[in-house]
Length: 428
Image 1 (tube, rainbow, N blue to C red):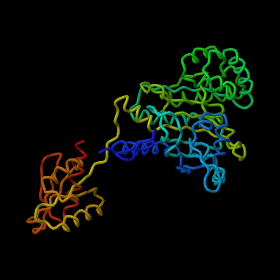
Image 2 (cartoon, rainbow, N blue to C red; image 1 turned 90 degrees about the vertical axis):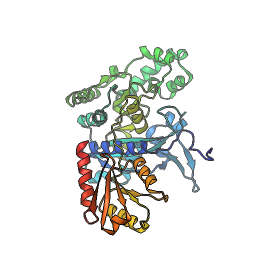
Image 3 (cartoon, rainbow, N blue to C red; image 1 turned 45 degrees about the vertical axis):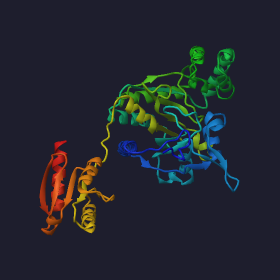
Image 4 (cartoon, rainbow, N blue to C red; image 1 turned 60 degrees about the vertical axis):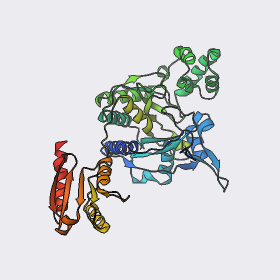
């Protein structure tokens, strides 16, 4: 049957087992973050449009082209969040998190929204995991933020990726570089695409994001910001790469790496994967020491990263990896002919109250069909409730993995099930 309604273009449903993989992935990342002192934060999916205009930048593609923005009944302009760093800084300032001590180490996970052209690895609703450290300029924190993705990727068994790093300077040295770059771009404007010509007028460093091969060739001779860094930025960047080497994180310096948001200063980085075509950046971020001030707060340093969940799943698929074991039902309770329905449900409830994952038939199936259903659900054990056995105060437990079965007393049912489940886990 053709469905009447479909998910909006550029969005999709996470159904199992992919949804379970996402939860396992988030659990693995949360464990890594927790061991480094990060605490969970959750911000609204709706924010003031002005927050993103001020934070991300008026001339960025996100603000000018990609945000979902509307005016509510009260006349307030709101936008679905296209990224999470500006909302986290807003929450940090609004909720006075600085009063709880610095630095604040926060992480988040949730959906973001951008009206982009849908393609593999690029969606209009997508999910990010990210972390922010607010309140310190310590260069080890830059390296720590970068290393979190590397640790996660290695734990998942991923290979064939590259970390590229750069410094995009600060408010002291970047303006002179931008003037130099603008002059260079003016001289090659005829070789650039229309989008790059627009960027060269509004935000020159963004031209390095262009994927057009003709533009990339024309930009090969462009000046690199590394040549224009002030002494403080040079020292900062050198300390960051020294810390990365200490942490055992492999990297390559790319002097033309920039980030697409205006708030970045100093450290910028991207993790790029092979086999993901144009959308090959899975995790990225950097330092943003001026963002809190742009949003009306005091001068406050910050650094963070965000990781695309959908792109990470694509990277796992491209490398033939499936490191997540889906949750398995421990027991399926099957009622034989002649057994009262209430007896099956009483046993089902007793198992669940004992902490055993259990399910039963709710489609009025015969015993043979119930056994097939247990197999479809991947149940480890089937607890068969027979009329004669029930009258004797006994029950049959069938081990689907070992093709064996035993009869136990109802009183000893839970201990017997736990023993069989533990024995099965030892075989794995």
